[in-house]
Length: 193
Image 1 (cartoon, rainbow, N blue to C red):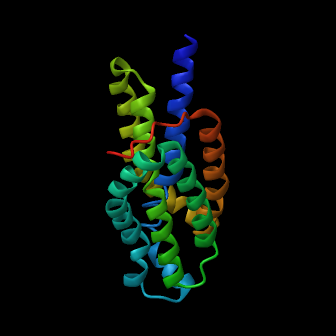
Image 2: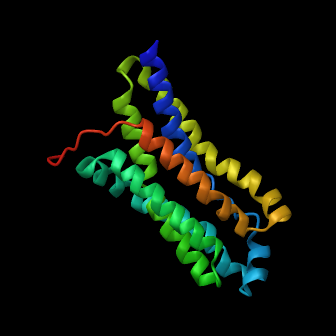
Image 3: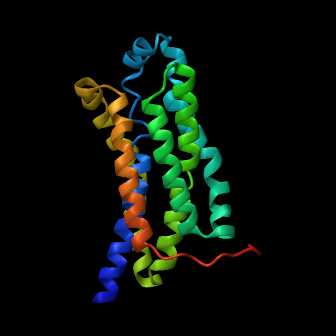
């Protein structure tokens, strides 16, 4: 029973980190007109605050899985979470459309490591007979985080402004980092893989 609770805590820590990174990927999609007005830019340029991070996630993610194999998935998870928090703070302080897009893309590129790292940690943490259920939860959070971002984005921006999304993401991500570093085990490095 103790082992099961340890697995549950490990799963929760990995999924919390995954959610804290993933929910902001699409969160600004309904707020492009307001952001473009705020930054004095046209809406077609500002759409890159959504498109750019999605592309960064897709392009960088596979390479991040390889880096985790080489240097350890827990370490990569932690570094990625720190970078996400830094870029979230910079995004909140963006002074132009170009800086907003750049910080969003760089933050997403760093955050792309959290998906493969958390998946690898969960894969090694759970025994084969329980792994499918854990992977199901991982898939739900991985796909559901951006959906929640789209749904929550409009009301948050309407009530507080778009910058507060990223101001709020900083402590959320740092909390996820702290929990992960306290709970998640390191995975074996596989330099030959």
